[in-house]
Image (cartoon, rainbow, N blue to C red; front, side, top):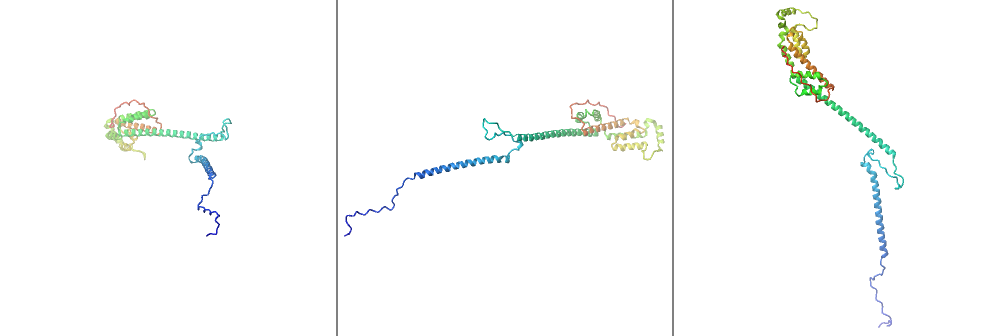
Amino acid sequence: MSDAPDDLPPPAPPPPPFAPIASEPPRRSMRGLAWAVLLAFALGLAAMAAAMHYYARWTATKAPTAGAAPAAAQPVVIVPAQGTRPGGPGPVIDLDELSTREGELSRQLAGLEARTASVGQSAAVASGNATRAEAMLIAFAARRQIDRGLPLGYLENQLVQRFGATQGPAVTTVRQAAASPVTLEDLRAGLDAIAPDLVTGASSAGWLASLRRELSSLVVLRRAGTASPMPSERLSRARRLLEAGQVGPALAEVARLPGAAQAQNWTAAARRYVDARAALDTIETSAIAGTAPAPVAAALPAPAQQPAPTPAG
């Protein structure tokens, strides 16, 4: 039996081990978190805008130094003053900058004009040198044809165009010499053919006069250092002069021989040879000096065809 009284209430049951704790829903904490996220987003946008602004200003200041055109080639930009309103004063123009750029442009234009003048002068000099070279080639080619005893061909028209206006007589002489050419070999062969008659002169003066001349030339008095006047010595000197190409002195020696009157054909041929070379010298001098004008379309009349005298006499 228990000593406890029967009227006491029964004991309360023990609480559960994990009883739920009653609490109010977190409305205020969620609202603050949302405001913090919005504020952080706004600050991020502001920071990005500021970074883009400063980056654009930095690239604008650095770009001209990397690949911009020279200051003289940049156009003048008139920037309105800061704070200018549409109804306010007009833009400000930097007169010093304009004056500086105008001076640079003037110097550049002067340099271009100087270069243009130099190029024009160089072109004129080059054209003159080309014309002189062509004239020299034509003159030298004409001499080669004359020396070989060949006709001029196309060179005849070139001679007329290049030198007909300034050296007309020389061109005519060369054309006549080409029409009936005489070479150095022709003169040598002709002199050998008429040598006996030149030395004795028997055909023109008779045998008696020739005998007297031979007797008078047996003893000849002359100064030391002077050439011998004997016909045989003169003929030898004439041959040596022809071998050296000196037709003029050879012609002078032949003219002093006893039979010079019988060598009229040879003498005429030798004179034509000398005249043709003198005319060629005149044309070549004109070509070298650059006095020959540019070629023209005019042409001289054809030279008169003359029968070529035989050098044999």
